[in-house]
Length: 149
Image (cartoon, rainbow, N blue to C red; front, side, top):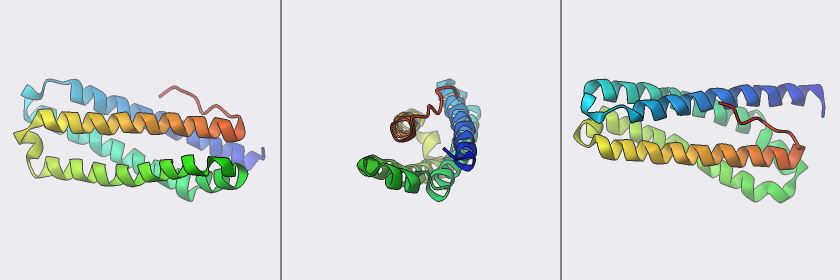
């Protein structure tokens, strides 16, 4: 493996940890009592905004950065799994925008329990996406991206 690609994988590891931290922060915000009202909504909004930022960075790093292009070239047998990851990216973009819009439109105020459930479903899908991504990288390169963060 060349040093440029090794440096790229280090950026992936670092970003993976940041994304994990954002997921934990959002999960912690969701765990606060919804009865806190505006405080709960502000904390969830801030954590969801941070997750949205980290997801945009993730898409940029893996799509534009070349991971998925390289995976297809190096391991064509993984093309279907790469497509699943790319479909998740589109879902994340749309779902985060929907959840932030729902918050801004006041829907999170009307039904915080439903908003919590929707955000929780997003977090579960991001967790599965990270697991699949780690498995893909390991299968193609025999490199562990790490489980921390």
